Image 1 (cartoon, rainbow, N blue to C red):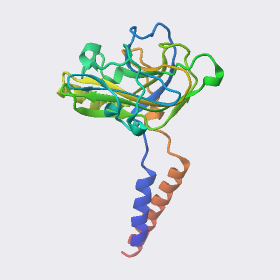
Image 2 (image 1 turned 180 degrees about the vertical axis):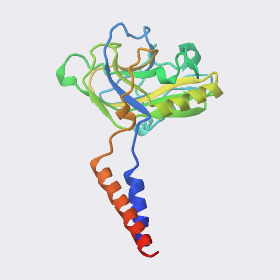
Image 3 (image 1 turned 30 degrees about the vertical axis):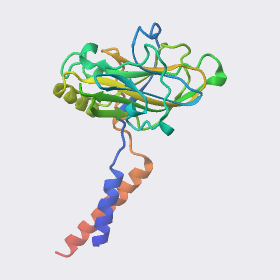
Length: 251
């Protein structure tokens, strides 16, 4: 019976574990007038096939390249594909109006991915394999990387800056980011991204803030357990019940 309860507890623990993302997908956020220079562009990257773009903070300045890839973005051979120009930037949270409490906080921040694959249907869709919101201290130390846990395949938004697909921190991670900002008033924001199925481009990631960011669907943060997980949880409860009955009979 000892094996039953140990097995039951183990299965129960397994069945009650739910996986959630640090960055929750919000779906399409269509709009116009979001070209480079008109929005807070963080990463602009372009390649045929698979592409990587990483922008971070080092030596007191914005830096690009594989050394700035975090949150599971791992370019093979250290090759990234950032484009030159105004599309690769880091931002002080304070300059974006982000505070640790009240007004705009990290609960009102989203990364918007614009897969600029043109209007040719043969060039679509594009898959965002990984996206990470990276926070740095003023000295360039990575404080935290908040990343997606699943790839995201979607049609493109033709034209650089035509909005795209939003991702924001879940409630728990937004609280962590706000705490980091409270402890680091000069917090710097960067990002890493990896995409596949790229045929045109350049593709961009920019930061959007404010009350206009769509709300998170509660199911995205607290997903309904998978059927397998529910069955496993049932076996765990059954094991506990059998052990309890044996205890009562032995008294």
